[in-house]
Image (cartoon, rainbow, N blue to C red; front, side):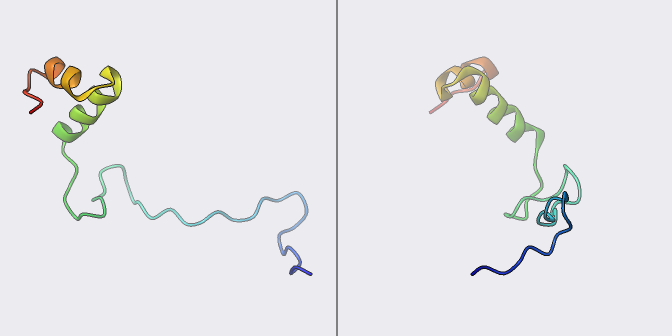
Length: 62
């Protein structure tokens, strides 16, 4: 038999704590995020392929 739920009726269980303090927080690598990295990821997401994203940003994908 499982342990009884200790949350009051009608209340959702507590979620895990948020570890990020702000959108500009350092990622797990310890390096700060750069806008160039964001631009590249955004271009890949929008254009669906690395060559198309590179062309859109005026970069060489190789």
